[in-house]
Image (tube, rainbow, N blue to C red; front, side, top):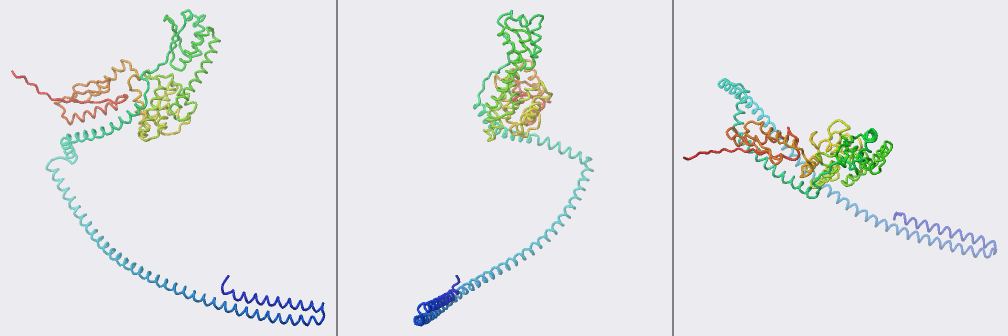
Length: 529
């Protein structure tokens, strides 16, 4: 409540009380007059008048007290308002002084900016004049240079292109040695650092993952208890063997080899179905066309389930998460596929684990790397059913059956350098693929292919000028080149070594690395007699 209104409130209250008291007395007087008569009414009238007079007196006293209290409060408020006004005036004066100082500082800055602008304009004019002078001098220099070049052409009798070619040839001859030394030095520095880091990563991955050195192969022979069983397998007029071959899609060879029947087929899964079905028929003893169809159908269903379970188990072992059932089935089919006598499913698991370990060493996602490694050869499960190489087939199948990760798809299609490699996981899968394929005992190579590969290495090295002999050693892991010391110097030998290595990379396919060593030696022999 506002303090100024409190005195008037007290005055109003006093007046209300007085009026109430007067009204009450009047009421009592009327009542007493009705009951007691005139005598009593006179007494009550006197009392009421006395009470009314007393109430008026009290109300006047209250009015005076309220008036005095209101005057005191008004005086105090006036003093407080005066003090507040003085404080506000002092603050306003202080604020004005600050504004004046700030205005003075702004004016000073404006004067300095004006000086700087005038100085900048002056400098700009100087720069324009200097640029004009430089352009004039440059034009004069160009004119003089053209005149000198024209005179040189007239004196030497060479055109500009001939002069440039002669100059470049001279520079190449003079700088060949320095150029080769710098290349060699930079290559050695980069090779030392990169080889050390690569060896650490690869060695760590190989130490953490150890697989068996021998590779499994698909068995295509069935043992029989006696040679009499061969006749039952063939059946009357060959109907049993014809039915069996028609149901399984394989060729059954029954020859004079004792105790063995050979099952031959291009499709390894069909060959495994035929082998198991024939083993069941031999154990059962009932061999006739109807029974053959039942056993082959039953065995086919068992193999399909087994293939799916093998694929799921491989995905679980590689810790790559769930796969589409079709991809799991394709993975399971790799169990019956070999490459250079190496089981492709085991090879894929090795590549998955090695890729994951190397990715973790490089602080990459090991799960994605293992997924890339496990699926990199998935196309080999259907390369006899679709056209194209297994990288392209594998990428198409993976994309068709729900694989959306671009790193995985690129690793499948690019792990044999069929496309430009721009994903780090593809490099890891290619390295792991080379490790798994080139470790001792992983693969077997026929003598003809081995000799042909060595001859191709030596032929590529001998195709360069200045080469006397080339020898492929270390099972094709190194090429020793004997250079003609009379035709090549040391700098040219360095360039020749680099050129041979690049030619091998471009012309040949090989796992791992091939070391190229160029030997140039000058010997002076004299016999004293």
